[in-house]
Length: 454
Image (cartoon, rainbow, N blue to C red):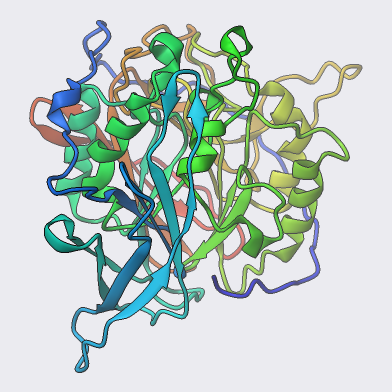
């Protein structure tokens, strides 16, 4: 991980203007029925004895993770430059973990951190031995800098249904994304009897076609909690935290549930909607310190990922993120956060740049208003999971909602330079990912001009 620079934080709050009218509600509505999970047989284990499964990685110092179902070893990842003159192979050993959940016992879960990689370099890596050897590749990101272009994919609440597969296939066909921002709710194992953890194994095989080749930045959602005291499971996030490691210590975090990473010209902060965030809690204390580290001269784009949306005009999960909004929204405005991505609601929505920081329980000012220093809030919990789409919106459409639609899909964020980024949301429709919503975003620190939907 790159070293994080410290700067003095300057608090600014710009003038505020009102919003006149609501935005657009997309007329296309995805089928109202819930989708069904793809059969387990659709994603069989790879061939070969003790063959490794589930490769994935994140960050410039890459975390490669895999599972061996029968034996602890081999616990080594071999890697080398794909186009280098000297294809000298290096190796890194993994730490090994496993867990039990009710009547399920995991395989041996390996996490290997490969360090000191070159920027913008494609690497080949191998897992396993003999006829169980598996080969993948990844490309490291460019050196962090204010005008470094970089493209993110964004997906939330994916699950493992036929609709989920359409979402992921459409993202892969887009071929633009270099890193995936995942806003939580992965396998939906907890929607099955006794939180069937085989679903965690199958989900990892399902997404391997992406996670093994490009970084996914993970956010924990409510379906990662797996807290089930009714059958003796008292440790929250147990399967998730055993399976998905993130570089949280690099940002001074004490928990993998909240952390930050720098990528291109973006500084990405991941928060946990389902961990304590009140005054004096570890997450609260960390975020105070983390926002003070952000150097907009180096990483102009400040992006936050969390699971439960703060602004949502869908009746589904309405206002569930309110207490976190009250706690942190003023900080986001003061620090000019550019974008906030959330999931949880199984539909799509993009807000205006609005805030509700004037509100307190005595002054009666409780309406979100236009604020040029505020983020755009995007709800993208429309990955296609088994619970189906959330199609019941509040009416009339509130003024803070710019575009909303009860469909499944994914998004692409193309950061061009320190001032401009182009955003598109791609609806799953027929067999083509349709760009149903698009927007040029202007950076709040370098170019705080008013935007308009394209």
